[in-house]
Image 1 (cartoon, one colour):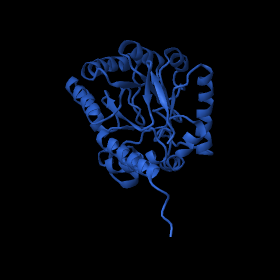
Image 2: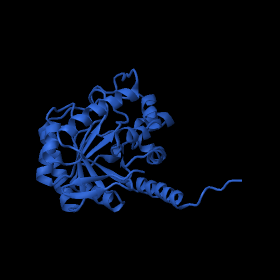
Image 3: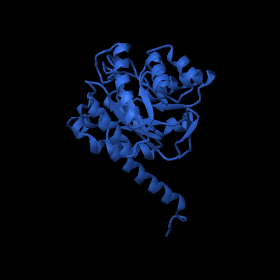
Image 4: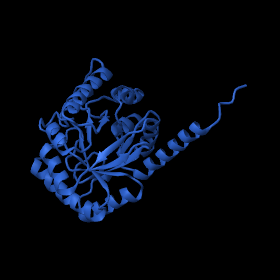
Length: 290
C-alpha cells in the first residue's frame, strides 16, 4: 500500500495505515435512522463514541444526501452545523473534523469558526461553482466524490455508456483544475450509491484498485449500510452491518485509505486484521514450494 499524508492546518496526517472516519449526522432524515443525532446529549455521546472506538476523523453532516432527500437552505444547514460543531469542539477538542457539505460558504465558515480540517464535498464542486476557489484559499484537504445528478435526482434511472471511463474523466478534469489552483491534498470518493444502480456499485468495487493506480491519490470508500448491501441481501440499513464489514474488508485489500462508516469499532477491527495480514506478508520468507 502506497504511503500518503495530508497537511491539516500545518500538521501531517499519515495515511500509511488506513484510517476510519466516523459519521456524525445532525440531520432528522438521513437514510440510516440509527445515525440521526438531534439532541445535545445524542451529539455528545456520538462524538465520544466515534473517538473512543478508534476513528481518526469525525465527519459531521447537516444536509441529508439520501435519494430524494428534502433540500434545505444554507442557513438551516449552518444552524445545524453550528450547534453540532460547538458540541464536538467542547467534547472532543483535539479531534480531526471534516465537514460534509457542497456549499462553499458553509465550508468556509466551518473552517474559520471551528477549525474544521477537511472538506468533504459530495458534488466535487458541481453544486457550488465557488467551492474550488474556496478550497484553494483555505488550503485544507478536499474530498471530492463522484455523483451523477443531485441528491434529489441521482437515483432516477442512472445511466452510463461506460461507467469507469466516465467516472475517471470526471475526476481527471477536476484534479487538473485543482492542481492548477494549488490544491494538492485531494482524496477521491467513487460515490457508491450516488447516481448508480446496484450493478454500477459492484462494478466500481470490482475495479477499486484502479483509482489509486490511475490517479496516485488517497481513496475514501463510503459504503456503510447502503442499499447496495441490504437490497442485494434483503433487509434494511439496520441489517447491513455484516455486509458493510465484508465490503470494507475488500475495499481495504484493494487499496482504500479511509473508510467512512457508522460502525467505527467494526471498521477499526477490519483495518487491524487486514494490516496484520499485510505486515505478515511483508515479513514472511519466500513462499513454500514443492
